[in-house]
Amino acid sequence: MGIRELQGYATFFMTIIFVVLMYGYILYLYRSEKKGEKDYEKLGNIALDDEITSTPINTTDPISDEKKGAK
Amino acid sequence: MQSNAALEYDYTIAKLYTYTAILFGFVGMLIGTLIAAQLAFPDLNYLLGEYGTFSRLRPLHTNVVIYGFTVSGIFATFYYLAQRVLKVSMAESKFVMFIAKLQFFLYLVAATALVVTELMGYTQSKEYAQMEWPLDLLIVVIWVLWGIAMFALIGIRREKALYISMWYFIACFLGVAMLYLFNNMAVPTYFASGGVGSIMHSVSMYSGTNDALVQWWWGHNAVAFVFTVPIVGMIYYFLPKESGQSVYSYKLSLLSFWGLMFVYLWAGSHHLLWSTVPDWMQTMGSIFSVVLILPSWGSAINMLLTMKGEWNQLTDNPLIKFMVLASTFYMLSTLEGPIQAVKSVNAIAHFTDWIPGHVHDGVLGWVAFMIMAALFHMAPRMFKREIFSKNLIEAQFWIQTTAVVLYFTSMWIAGITQGMMWRAVDEYGNLMYSFIDTVTVLHPYYAIRALSGVLFLTGFVMFAYNMIKTMTSAKELTEEPQFRSPMA
Ligand code: HEM
Image 1: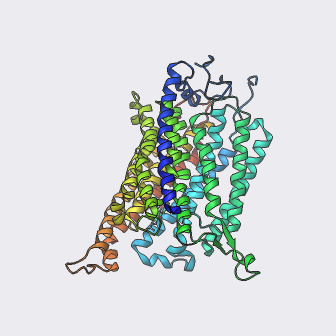
Image 2: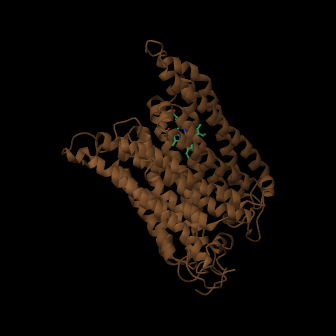
């Protein structure tokens, strides 16, 4: 098998892996919200409530956190 | 971390890039209009000797609108919105401020050098990578400084979650950094040969098909990481903020982001269909281009749905008009591109005017509209004055929309006519037309495009005038508007 064929197969399988990962990501997004671990939609408020004096939507760890404080 | 009543966002840098966006936008579009007119009326080639020919001015047009106008728009909006979504002021860090100022200064030097060297005819002869090696080195420094400022700002943020726009700006930074380096690998011939020829000259480190592949890996991703990714970052901030509606689905925005990141990088070979690159790679380019519709429309539809229940704003806020039309044009060009990437369609479309037609429904309708709307939104906050004239924005909107429609419709007709005529054969298999036959037929469409250039440029001058008036003499505001930008 020449290098070109190898490259072709490699791309094909990478694509498959990627598709699986993407679907996994969708599942992950919805599951973690359903379980109450994360709340992605509240992050949309970062754009609306963006005064330097306003309370951050998330003060700790990126994206995650079920902690309150957000509106 | 205590809130500090006196603390304010610092827009010094955002303002500087706003000025350059206006300046380079005008220059770039003026050149665009001139070269459009040259294609229709070739005598216009001889106005300025060698400096006024189409061959000199075309790369100057693309470089000034991309690296002058669009990149200024990207930096201006970045230095504006990054502070806001991270809830940290640039005034809080002398370091960030210094780096950003240095970056702006070097950017001005590079932009000036770009215009001068390209007018003089120095070029690497690679599309969107014409700048010769000394300039490339300068660009690397500017880009690295941007990265430092970006990550330093992220490092001192109060808002721990990175808003989706920030993801897009980070991607713009990383994507361009990687691709620019690879594509511009070149050997300066003067040094390699021990002092022969011009110091400015260089040859690519790749050759033949590989060179073409690397070039279009870059070329297409310049579209991705300069014309798409940061502009999507802009709309995710400015449309919600101007309308007071938060993003329709934040999850969809995340998903579209990762989809776009993965898919875009593989689509570049659609520029090389029917060429000497391996067949599977051409097929991959086509397929990934079609798949690209999904993440692109994901973002665009997300933006349109953000306006759900608030469509009345479309009629009474011209900035919303600009942004909604921008995302609509984004949908149009991300549907058109994949169609052109289908091999059989590409056999007709390639090398024809349909390609610049496609390019400009994206860059005029999407990129330029979005940047102008963003700068309009920023102006009252940066200059603490209301926007000088609403009527002027309305008029500008309709003039420029007409211009975009004239541009792409004329080029659709011209391109398809051209493609069909080049391929037409008689019953014996002889070509039916010579090249000049197509030129004659296309003349009216070229004239229409030149007219569209005049209209778009007129609209841009109205924008510039409105912005300058806003900076200098519009009514002062006592407090910062929360959502909708105030205008007289
Ligand atoms: C007044 C508005 C404009 C006019 C009249 C105009 C006109 C033109 C013309 C005549 C060409 C050459 C087409 C050819 O070689 O056949 C061109 C190419 C191009 N323009 Fe513009 N332009 C305008 C604005 C812009 C803006 C704002 C951008 C980007 C932000 C842009 C990006 C490009 C690019 C990327 C190309 C190369 C297309 C290709 O290689 O297929 N243009 N433009």
